[in-house]
Amino acid sequence: MKPELSIVKIGGNIIEDLAALTQFAGLFAEHKGLKILVHGGGKLATEMAQRLGVASQLVGGRRITDAESLEVITMVYAGLVNKNIVAKLQAKECNAIGLSGADANTILAHKRPVKEIDFGFVGDVEGANAGAISALLQANFVPVFCAMTHDGNGQLLNTNADTIASEIAIALSGAYRTTLYYCFEKKGVLKNREDDNSVIPYIDMESYQQLLEKKIVADGMLPKLENCFHALQRDVDKVCIGNMSMLNPSSTLFTTITL
Image 1 (cartoon, rainbow, N blue to C red):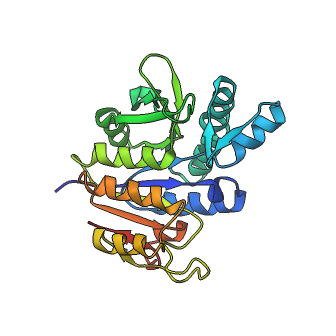
Image 2: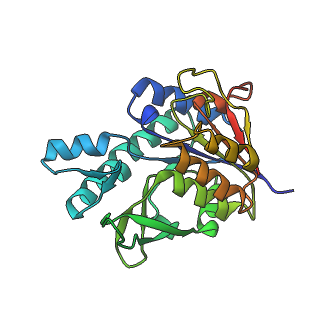
């Protein structure tokens, strides 16, 4: 039987709140079995860019990553945020090791082609290096990936953290029973966006189409769920969406995505 592996992605609601990050570190450290953490950068890159006098460009909520912005993102994502998280986990006796996709050639990507918009140094993932990541897991390290990849030719790329988490889960699904957790500020996918307790416990492809037609699922939840189904269709065993409490074994209030 394949060993169990959890891939957990966290966002700005945890990263930007010291108390929340400390609480999460405790839950993640206690989570049983092999595990990997993936994080974004939240608003911290934008705040640092302002302090350094570097203009931030957003189109439709997506960052345009020019050369100057890439320098700031590298400092914040791969440096400040990543090492703060690693230090918090080490304080909980979780032997974390901070990584970008360039480290050990773990995540290869290519620069997003220019269509209507030139996003600059933004990466679309080609794949994750299952052998290198497995070697870290087998050496009892807990990999902590920031939202950065590389193209194999010396270029770092700003890359969506949800996608990185999904692609890591897919790459490792051949050797492990993989569960992908997307942690965000809500308790799960909500039937009523005004009611935080209206969590939909299970969503499959059929019910997903119904939720789309009724516009219950929309906006920022759409790409997240697309990543979920993309992973499940490529042999990831299970995907869960909710807040950090879903890492507690006794928790029942979160959304499980299935095919």
